[in-house]
Length: 322
Image 1 (cartoon, one colour):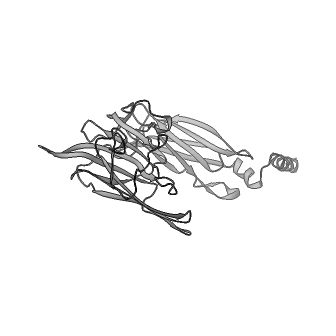
Image 2 (tube, helix red, strand yellow):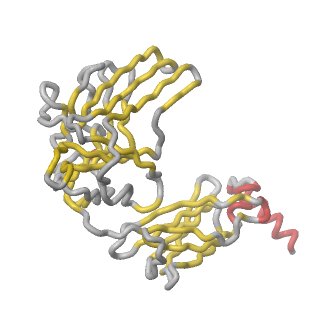
Image 3 (cartoon, helix red, strand yellow):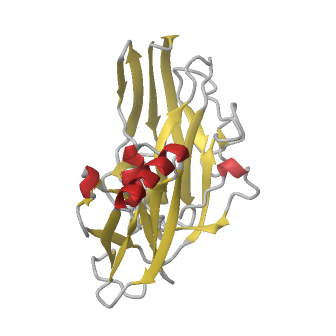
C-alpha cells in the first residue's frame, strides 16, 4: 500500500510538471513568531497581523493566508506549508501599516531553517500628517534638463524650471548636468545639486524603502547638518559600472531659508530615493525624483496623502506614501 502511494505521488508530480525539488518545497512546513513594537521598541498588543505562505504550483506560485491579533506582549505565532518564502505585516488603528517578507534557508528534505524565528514588525504612530506639495516629478510630464553644463533653478512649488526655461519663480534647487555619452558601454554623467540661500542645504538619510512601515524617513527635519551641495554620479567603462549613490539613499532638505529672531527659518522637505537622470543618449536628458515640501514653515515631514497641494496630478506622479 505504501509503495502504491509513493508511485502515485511521483506520477502526480510528473504529470503536473513538478520537479522533485518543487514537490519537496510544496510540502515543507514553516513556523515563526511575529513580535510587534512601536518606534520606542515597546510591545504593541491588539495589532492585526496577516501572513502569506507562498507555495509552488508547478507553473508559478500561489499563497495562502492567515491572520490574528498580537497578545499583551506584542507576539503571535504562525505555522503553515510554504516554499520557504513568506510575507507578513501589521495593521492597527492610529498606526501606519508595516509590511515585510522573509526567506527561510532550504535544508532539502529536512525542511526549512530556522525553526520558529522571531520576526520583528515596527509600527510608526500617526501623529500629525499635514498638507504638502508632493510629486513623483518627471514620471509622466517630462522634465528635461534645458541646457548642459549650466546652473538652472527648479521651483518645487510650481514644479518647473525657473524663467526663461519654465514657469518657476524661486530657484529652490539649482541643478547642473554634465555628461559624455560615447555608447552604452562607455559614458559618464554628473548631476550637481546646489542651493540659492546661504542656509539652504541637504542631508543624506540611509533607509531601505522596501518593506517596513509605509511612513519612511525621519518625522522631523533637523536644525543643523545641511550640506551646500551634493553630486549624483554614474559611469560605465566596459564592464566597470560605478554610481555615487545607492538604493537606500534618501534626502532631507531646507530651502528659502533666512535668519529669523529665533534662528534659521525656511521650508523643509524630503526626497524619497535619489534624483535620477534618464537616457544619456538624449541631448537633453530627463530627470525623475519623488519629493515632498511642507509649506507651513515647520520641520514636520509627515505627509497627509489625502491633502496633496498639487491638484489633479497624472496617475504616475501621484504620491500615496506619507
